Amino acid sequence: MRNSLLVKLLGAFLLVILIGGMVIGISVWLATRSAFSLYTNRVSRTWAETLAAPLAEYFSTNGNWDGVDAFISTQLPVSASMMGNYGQGAMGHGMMGQGAGRASSQRIILTDSVGMVVYDSLNLLTGQLLPTVQLLSGVPISVANQQAGTLIVSQGAASPLTAAAETFLASVNRSIVLAALAASLIAILLGILLFRYVTAPLRSMKLAAAELAQGNLTSRIPVKTKDELGDLALAFNHMADDLQSAQIQRRRMIADVAHELRTPLTVIQANLEGMIDGVVRMDRKHLAILHEETLLLNRLISDLRLLSIAESGELVLDRQNVDLSSFLPKILDKFQPAALEKKIRMEYQQDSSLSKVMIDPDRITQVVMNLIANSMNFTPRGGLITLTAKQTGKMVTVSICDTGSGIPPEEIQHVFDRFYRVDKSRARKTGGSGLGLAIVKQLVEAHGGKVSAVSPARSDAKYPGTCIIFTLPINK
Picture 1 (cartoon, one colour):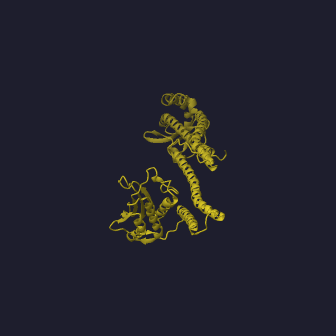
Picture 2: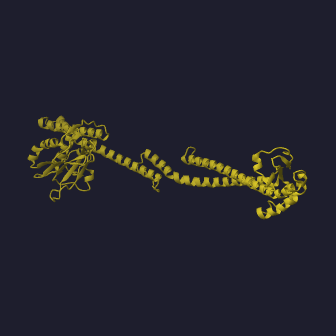
């Protein structure tokens, strides 16, 4: 469970929540402090603007700032109380409506026209020259359109407003922490449900894969979504289907190979045992039978080896630039004696001009001879076999058509399977081993072409016939 995908996803999700919560919390805290600082600065400036009027009147009356400390101590609390009443209406009850008590919580700094401090309620900067930047934060005191000084009001170090601000900020911080914890808990619960839902197909796939590994090829994954996980489940099911199909084909091929080998071996064994027991004469006739069966075995083994090499992609082709116009008729001519004996007509047709193809002549000869021989077996006396070549785009299409009995529609998709025979009752000598068309398919595809079967090839009701069509790429 420690290394499960669910735990890893939840861990990553929790880390994202933690980082996100910290970023949001710090951002809110900094924004709140900044807003409170801005608010207190505005409050202080409002106080300064309110106190500037009586101070300007004082300077106008006295002509200087001498004795201003006594004036501020005795007179400004009254003015501050008046400002406090103003503050109740303008800025909210409870913030500014404290009168002199509120004024006493403020630090008041007064400078003359050149920035020299003439009064500091904390008596720390009196007699010092303030920098221009600090003076810009104050309120100028004007008398007769002339600046007589600057008044700076700020919150005292232990003022009630500062304490209230810190209390508020602490409350905000607690709220942020509690909200983050609550949100994290809800997010984790939802994350568990979500990740369990997301990883459910993966868990099903894990169980199905384990069953496949144990040999149960019928195991499948239910597809409940149409997203990437659904596609993955479909791909897994297709893989399982292919494995099951391959296993069935493998078992069928083993059975077919055993059957094909058993028949000639049974004939050989029966004849040899008869010769040993003296029941069968050891003459030329019976030895020829044994020889024919050994040739059949050798041909079957050679076909199986060729098919295996071609299917594995290890078949080596000796490609040459071949002109099919002269190549195909020569192959057809080899069957003329047998065709005359069966009274089967053979024709060759082609386009006016054919491009050369890069092929292995021996392998393509094997393909064409296999197809013509197959057509000879299924074409009745007086029938017709047509070999046609035509160029279509970048491919040359070769077709071998006969006027035989044709192939039923339900059988035609299997004619290129190993050991498949359309007529199950045909003898091996007439029906072949069932490997011919499978070999044709592999050899054509090794050249980069495709092969297919069409039946009925003609509309004649008596001879519907069959066409085997394959393509070869043009050498350009």
